[in-house]
Image (cartoon, rainbow, N blue to C red; front, top):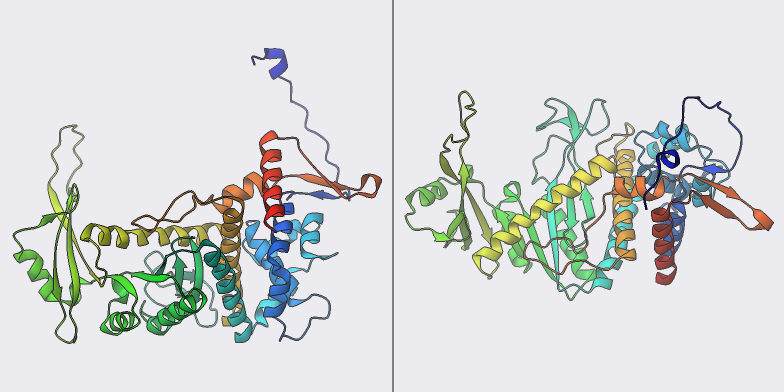
Length: 458
């Protein structure tokens, strides 16, 4: 339809007069979705069980405070004192079941009063929610990715230390180790560590614990593991082999001179792709007692051109090769092994989502257990939003060689700005609670579709 200029243009020079009144206005109309979703998961009851051993608060329960912290991160806020920006929001109060929201001091005291048992129970809740989803999918293969991520801070919080930090050299940090599920893009568990430890510190026991938990919850599935070169050791490799776990692990060249000689002495490489070739052999380091399958892969790459940049369209490039070695016990073709191992790069996307939209990099308090609970709140927020998207939509992919996630997930920030952050007003015409939202066709259709799907999923 074509509109005239008179129908489109208008004068807008006057600045409106501001008036502030106590009305039932909300900035987060989309929280009706989370209210329905949290009720479907019985999330409040599960959080109550996590903190049942804690002494009950005089006014606020531990479950209500922690649920507010999770919601705080879902709404996009970072610091605890940012809770003042939604202090009077009626829909936030309804979702939390409170007439008055706690202030920042109350939330801070909750985190400072956290104990190891609370942390362990929240970690178990993460696993239980994820196992329910995996059981419903009935997957033949479950892929576990392991890697660490640095959480820097300028404050002297308990347990922080100066360690390897690529972006903020000399900063104190934590260095948690994560286990993620490739098929759902969610975090299964994490091991909280100080920032001055190596990637492999405590990794063996953590990896085996995650494998045992998956095997106990989903006894029929084949478990696969992918890791980078920081986890390459005879202790971890032998443990995975003895546990009958399929794995691929990157091999560090700097620890084995023999690998360099094998690559340099190789004359015949078999083609793997357009710019990739390989060879393989059964090999073991001298101190090992078993041989494994080692894949040597080279990829053609442009070498960095040093010196002044020539703005010439026909400037030639000099090509070289990048090399990598992967050890595995998989029996599939080399092409599929390399594709499977390269798929672990998707875990970096999960870390990016957690740090950017769930505030994983923020250190909230000075206590070790409190900072663990804050990190777990961000991870729980991430997992819940992924679970919501899996609940309202069918998988868009089948299992691929790279084990790409079965859903094409929407970024939390996109969902937040498009659905959650919608202005509305709560009223009671004829005694019936009603939420009035702006008549945007797309938002209306999306909200109604999601609510209808959640009601049918109960």
